[in-house]
Image (tube, rainbow, N blue to C red; front, side, top):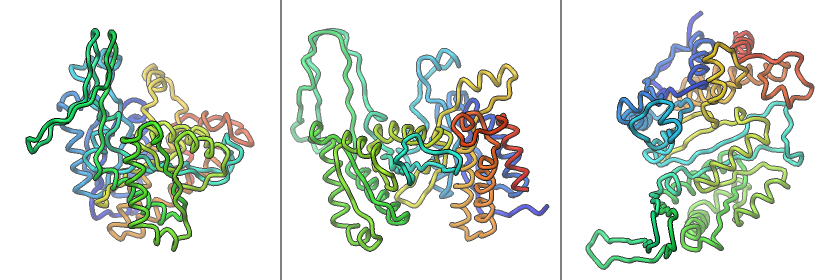
Length: 400
């Protein structure tokens, strides 16, 4: 058959473990038979990041900036256990954190809904979209292990040579730990603008929540900037779109989310968004049932799965088992990237293919053909649980 032609490439960022295995299967069975795929390939597997001194991560982010669209597989963030397992010499930062910092983007995560999977929270009637600030905070923090009693200070040394400012963090009475984190006004402004732009496009209200009653300076700055961006730049546009802006404390927001019906964009600081997006995904059915897109103020987009590398399934696969790992978020990462490439390059045939692949994927689940994570909560329960390869084949059959 004649494959759909692309004009410009997508930056493809490969990953680790079980998601890397299924990434290749998705491409082979669901993309390449139908699309003459153009990509710039970057291997962000842990060992290649080690071999390149993590330069490949920076290069991949620069490629996304240059090409305008990227698609990323899940990657390992190295820690002490991974250092031993993979015999690493270095512990590099999270690839996602590095890419997000370079692109200065906001991550939007939205559940993937199918009719046979009902949310765990019975009051939810509409999707809850998470807008996660993707720069700074704990992900760019400096940390120090304190060996004994002493004084810990926070010091700001102005670049113009004026007098430094310092405050005491703690008078340590003995061994402990300390952490310093930061953010930038410019990045917070970009975060707020991205959230309002996304919400206006999707016609959903915006919620923003911090803990400014406790963190009066740090979280208070986020609150003030969000309010300024809304009042000065987007209030009229929000009114025209029929949507509202609502601020509350993060603990109140959690309570309201659990008791509400959904249907809004929940803007969260970096760590809050990391945690709450997993909660929303799990309560919506599965961590593999959520899209994730990084949106840069410059108009650059990176699509990825919202979940990790599925480590335990990978160990079973290494022993020869065909696991029932859900590849839907990986599939939707590809469809999102292809649809955005089609939009930028004005390729309606490519856009239509992305829509058809998503529809075939959801139709497969709704027909009772699904992986184990969904089979446990589907109504009615399927007669048979498929492994990942059979599930992808079932999608391919519908698509074909």
